[in-house]
Structure formats: structure tokens, C-alpha cells
Image (cartoon, rainbow, N blue to C red; front, side, top):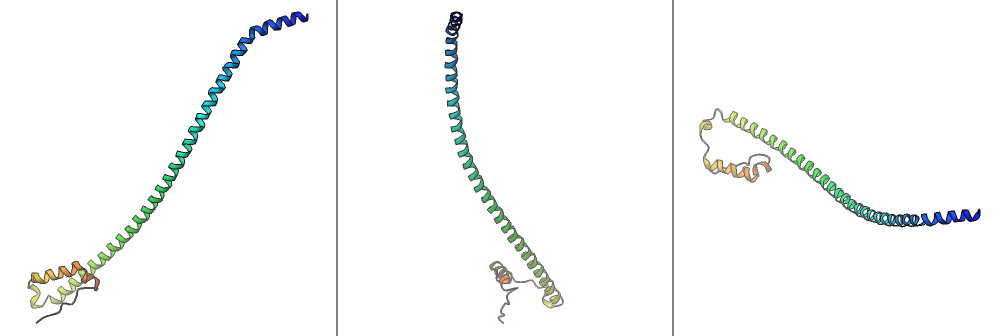
Length: 145
């Protein structure tokens, strides 16, 4: 009986052995392929992480630059707003002075007399140079009689 069992297994093993060898070879081949694929994916993952780090650093730098530019914009806007307010106040003051002068000289003989071009040019020069604004109003012109 033992001979029958051993002859059965030896015949079956002899038939199955090439199939087992082929399956073993295919599993080693698949394992090699998977190992190479995993190594390639790990390398790709490493490169992506490095690139992501660079992108994050660049993004942070750009975010800081945007924040700085926004602060500059806000500061410049507040300066512009202040200058507009100052300009508006100066225009109101000039309008009030003009009204006061017209009220004072309305009944004077010189009211209808045209201002000489030289005087107008001098006032423009003083205004453009900032003398009138810096000194808190129009400069007192010295009279030469």
C-alpha cells in the first residue's frame, strides 16, 4: 500500500512540479516588477514632495509680498485721502478769502479794474512754488510807490 501511495505522489509531483516551477518563476518576476515599480513611485513621491516644498516656499514669499503691497497701498491711500482733505480745505479757504476780498472791494473804485498780467503771473509763480501754501496764505506783496 505504501508503494501505491508513494507511486501516486511521485507521479503527481512529477506532473505538478513544472507548473509549480513556472508559478514560482512568475511570482519572482511579478515581485521584481512590483519592487521596481515601488522604487520608481517612491522616487517620484520624493521629487513631488521637494517640488511641493519649493512651491510652498514660493507661495509664502508671494503671500508676504502681497501683504506688503497691500500695506503700502493702504498707506498710500490714506496719504492720498489726507492730501485730498487738505486740498479741499485749501480750496474752501481760498474761496472764503476770495469772497471776503470781493465783499471788501465791491464798493471800491478798483473793483472793475483788470489785474495786470504781471501780477497774475507773479501770483501763479508763488502758488506753483508753494510759497502761498507754506506760509499759511498769500504772501504780503511789498509795495513800491
